[in-house]
Figure 1 (cartoon, rainbow, N blue to C red):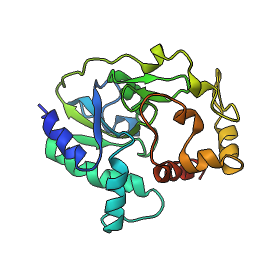
Figure 2: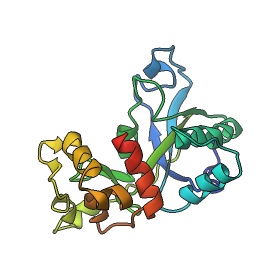
Figure 3: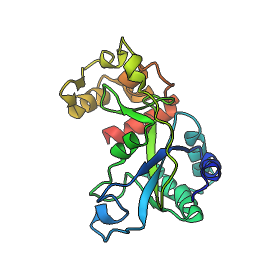
Figure 4: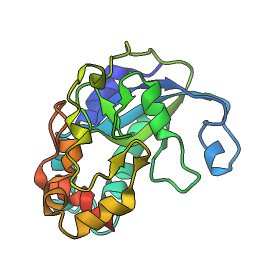
Length: 224
């Protein structure tokens, strides 16, 4: 059995958090999504992520100290670097949302934890972090894991839903997210989104946004 308190401490050293636990469904075992032979011993997972605080300072500190190399995909490299030893320590298999396709169902796993819900923007919303939650890795293990009590969706009691009206180019509609329209705006006139993060996400009253430096980092990755 994984000691979740110990795991929380190991993750906190890097500004990461345990989002929750989930049971693996058929076809989701480590390796199977990548076309490899499934490991039948792996039956449950622990979702690892970040909120708006903690991870960014830890990432920057490792960059400054030379423990992580800068450049393209630096955050992905850092994530593997800090999560892999934790996985080894607890006897888990680490998988990542940026692994080679076909991609594992991280969004479905997040919903399955009972701590994350679908928002009107199509993004996952966390009861405490709001829309400012990042999914960084999953630790797949044998056996079962204790489930966290499910939390209600913050959107259920949000009557104004300011996220739906904050986007200046209406990239979020009932038909889904128009990434092309969003990207064109961010590259062009959308300096507010480009330098401090998506205005629609920032309009959500739950949690608080990333610091401007981190938000700009992620937006730069989004626009390529």
